[in-house]
Length: 66
Image (cartoon, rainbow, N blue to C red; front, side):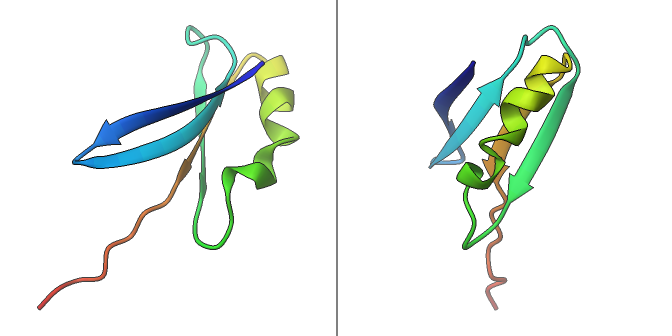
């Protein structure tokens, strides 16, 4: 089963999807703009069925400031 969660990191609320037992090895799936975690919707349950924990989070980049 895939769960949807939010975690606060450095004042930002980061949405992520998680599937599988937390006691199993973890795989991190990253995506960037303009994609979303929705593109992994079929892969996440398949990875969880293999015994992995799948986390999908956005890859956030900040433009350097001068």
